[in-house]
Picture 1 (spheres, rainbow, N blue to C red):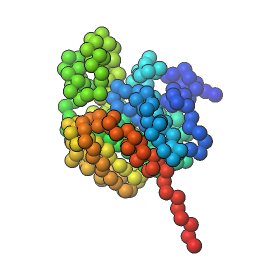
Picture 2 (picture 1 turned 90 degrees about the vertical axis):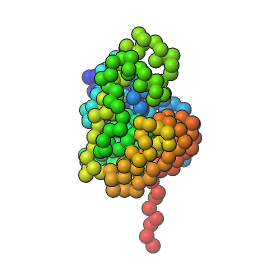
Picture 3 (picture 1 turned 135 degrees about the vertical axis):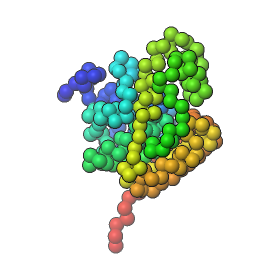
Picture 4 (picture 1 turned 180 degrees about the vertical axis):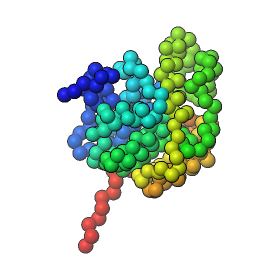
Length: 261
């Protein structure tokens, strides 16, 4: 078995800290928002239905991969991810990503199709404007630290005990700025849609992903398209995990074709 040069571990083990899914089981691969790691999806497993296994992806620069430099471009990140665990995207599976993770999940789906690999049964993107429209948000990646912290506080999702620790934020900003760079620089031309079904999720009070920007994803798939809007802001999903994970579990298992008679 070869070793990953960046991690010093067997390929795939760093990216999938929960381990491989049971053979033949449908899987929902989950990509985190900026600054978050695989642990953000730990509570999702108890809500999955129909035998769907939640497979959080651990990106470089966080948790046990803290010493690894984070990527700051979606394309390079997806290249590394496919090199490490590209062989895991087989059988019945779907992709989910929130905020920055939505950009990575969509680019991953696009690359899987372009490369002729097994495509996802469904792609779910959450809390992000469509990547071909003018970015509606202020760029954060190059802000001075005080302004950067203020914006993180406004967005929500980062505990105050972390935001209030200056020394800790000075260390964490490397990862956070790289993640925001992934999100803020990602673009996908409208003429390069995926074929997989695409469901866009968001909060009705999310200033970072207004409802109109969620509907703007429609040209980026030639398959079925749906927008689901819920009460709440950028982290609306934390208040309705059972409902959302149940929804994604159903769509992760594509309907079986009925034999012709």
